[in-house]
Structure formats: C-alpha cells, structure tokens
Length: 401
Ligand SMILES: Cc1ncc(COP(=O)(O)O)c(C=O)c1O
Image (tube, rainbow, N blue to C red; front, side, top):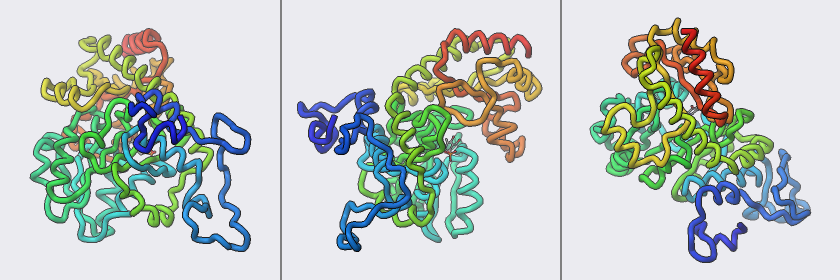
C-alpha cells in the first residue's frame, strides 16, 4: 500500500479505512528506489553526507545525524502512529525514554501532573522522585478514586498520566472520563497503552492527548529489543523534538528495524495472547490453590461494562493470587516448565514474575496490600504457545504447591 493508494488520511482509493491487520503489515511500507526491496533497508548510520560544501544546509527533510532524525526510526514511528489512529509518532530508546521526553520536554517548574497511583514502578519513580527536583508537583489519584478524577485537577494541571489495565492488578480505568477531566482545565491526558496495545484499545479515540508505549513489550513482541514510542492526535510532538535530541534517548536503527518487523504480526500475536489468557482464566478460576484471578473486567460488574466499552480484547496479562503467600508463589514458579520466570512481558513466550520480588520490591507491604498486591501474586505474561500446553504446565505446577 503506497502513500498515493492510501490517500492522506490512511484511506484507500475507495475511501475505506484499512483494517488493523492490513495496517500492521503495510503501515511501514517504504518504496526502495535502489533495488525495489519489499522490506525497506535499514539506515544503520550515525551520520549523513551533506550536499556539496553545505550548499543545502538547513533544507527541510535533509538528514544530519541519527540523534536528530533517521529514516528507519521515522518508519517505525509512522507505523505505530497509524496503528494507534494518531497523526504522528516518535520512537525512543526505551519506554522510559519516551515518557521522560513527554514529561520533561513539555512541563516547567510550577506545573502540576495528576497521575493514577497504580502506574508502572519506574514511572512512579520518575514522577515522585525526579519531578519535584524540577519544581513540578504531582497529585496522586488512588485507584478507588479514579472515577472522581475531576476533583484532582486544577488550574496548574498540565498533564494527566493513566495506565489501563494496570500492572499487576489489571484494573480498568475510564479513559474517556480522565480525558474529559484533562480538557476541563486545558491539560493533556497521556495514556500508557503498553498492556492493551492498539489492537485491544485505542486511547486517542477516547479523547487522550498522547499515547505512550514501552515498545519493548507487545509492539516489538519478541523480547529482543528495548524501545519506546509516543503518538499524538495532532502536531504537538514536534514541540518535544529539540528536547528529545538533547535528552539523547534515541532508538538504535537496528532496534527500529526489528520493531518494524515485530509490528507486522502484532494483531495476530495479540489476538492469540488474548485467547490464551482467557483460556487460563477460565481453567483456573475456582482452583483450590488459587485465591483469586486478576484480569481486566473480573473485579466487578461495573468494571466489566467499562472494559466492554473501551476495549475490544482484554490482553494477554493475567495475575494469579495463590493461597499461601510468597512461599506458595515461589513453589508455583519453580514447578513451571513451559513458562519462564523472568520480568518483562508482551513477547511470544510466556513469562511469569512475582511483583513482590521484582517491580514492587521497593514498596512497603502495607502500600502493596493497599494497592491489591498480595504476597502470593504471580503475574503472567501469556505467550502464543498452545493453550493446552500452558494449561498443563500451570496445572502441574499448582499440584506442587
Ligand atoms: C506499563 C509499562 N510502562 C513503561 C515501562 C517502561 O518501559 P521500558 O522498560 O521499555 O523503558 C514498562 C516496563 O516494564 C511497563 O511495563
């Protein structure tokens, strides 16, 4: 699908919008004028030759240096933007690089950020430990008060930060409501869409002003790169470019190439992960060794209705709370053979981790329990293996608990 066939707004010649599978395969297409390669070559270069003696220096579209711009990075960013239904995208060396650029590139001393308490651990660290050093104040919204987010915003609020579903409790929060609260004070809502992916949830269609990804996870999809991305529904990311170039969290072109390759199978992988996760929830709900299963929409009827409204699939993350706390969780992990014990998520292989000993180890027990993170919680990132093999693996590991 070349640019002309697609039209300006991503529609084809007949005015239809392509489906997400077609977009995933073709959104990164680039014509190769040297050899007609179907897969665009990597621009694995740190610098670019200037036209004779700088005669065209400053000309728009001319590349200088990869920290500032590189065609392979632009290819990955453009594809992610189209998958999210945004106007423009940028890629970064990691999810944290993307988030740092989004926050530090736009805010200044005296500004305020309103953020959900249950964000990814390093996001919490950036907001709670680093931002105060820059004179930026953060107001935290406890999960149970998320439906009253309007109460937390004020005239100094410039940015709201939300994740849904959350890590590792997989609670669902109302993106439209948070977007409305942001607009009411002229602020922007940033949604970390790492867990859901654009296959299951498109925050920009719900009013978000920016989407962020740890592309290390589902977008890359093979646990072999670190990458991050930002997407906006308007032209506002260009405001961050000068800061991003100074920050230097630039994605390597080879990682961008692998990211582009991963994106082509994103909908296939995610749909399979959705199905496998659902199969595990069905199989292990009510198991005598399992106290509770955490999964988007399972918490309450209200949350189920919200998940139906804002998600088209529930994702591949499932948390299993074992009776017997940490000792039981450790025994469960040591009995698994197909599922690998490792942090991170979103790859083709199933992984399991214990938040108590990994992502949330810095938090006090009281804080963890307040957020619904039991000592026996094992977080599963469900891969694309046969559901029957995953079920057999978990069943056998549970027998040893
Ligand atoms: C939800 C979420 N956001 C952001 C990040 C940070 O991404 P990265 O590790 O690519 O910097 C992670 C990493 O685990 C994550 O799970």
